[in-house]
Image (cartoon, rainbow, N blue to C red; front, side, top):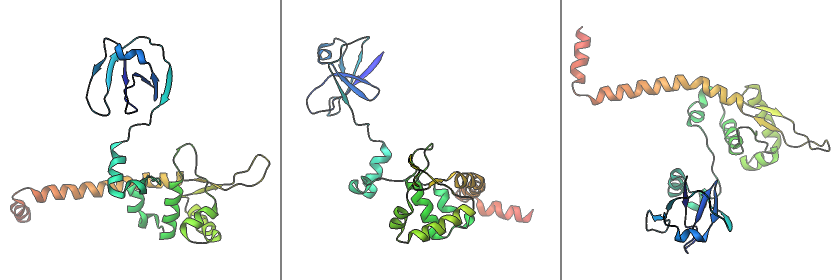
Length: 215
């Protein structure tokens, strides 16, 4: 079984990387099957080993994805450290089709900012949303009612173990379903536009157009 050992600190350490944890095993330094893969700061070691005693476990920071590094170059590391949201572009493109007013679109985007786990619906308080949007909590409630009437959002009251009311839970499955309905239309239009661009790029466009008109 092939395992990888990484250098998590400036000094050399050897071990097994399993399930995101570094099992430090100094004895591996003299293992005959170890070989250096790349002599730089993040040297990786490949070795084959069936069993090995471990003396220490150190959790490693997951490697940064390329998209994360690109975002840091675009927006700045400090800005991205505040967090980010994943918003489908179709939500912005389809704003007129969804008949969303600017404030309604803003509310949906803020709800999406609180929604990371597909199985756990967002539940920001009206006061938190109002603070972000710069409007009153009653206004948030009124605009949320409009979104619920449009079947884009569904509110569910949450309760504490002692029975007291908590902030609402917001189900965005209606919005997701509506975007899935609209996607084929937008994709078709984009494919038609791509086909036209490809046709324009080919030589003899005027000749083909003239022949078509003469026919």
